[in-house]
Image (tube, rainbow, N blue to C red; front, top):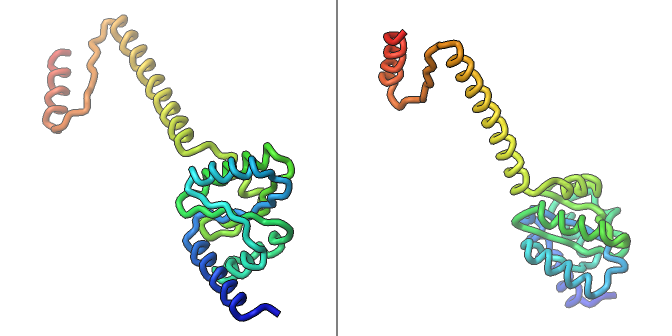
Length: 193
């Protein structure tokens, strides 16, 4: 039977882990079987750069900490060797790092996890990890918007050419700061006709 000192240490470990999990945006459970020291070092460094921690924690401690946080549905994932990834800042970047690592190493697997308090399946985490980064999505949006603006400009230029060829006067309306300026521009156009 474990001594009271050991039990108190374990209770304290559960309490600290539970507090960390309550603040976390991401908690990932992974099976780290077969990982060598060199790969482990690289993975830990990549996760540190993404402001995430990577620790090997006994399944019983993890199970109790998750229960203390009210997170259910991961008990069956806590079988065999389990590493825990926790991030308080971002859930996407650490998920991408773990997914890429698991893709490159057949023996390394994502078991499941929690994203912003919601228990997620392995498939949901992988789907999320496959999404482009925020910066990539913003550049795609900017490119799409600029493409549409360019198309409008080309179309307006074509309309202008057609009107000039037909001998019509072309007026370009520019958004004015004062409504009176818009009315003046309309009056000038009407007078000129």
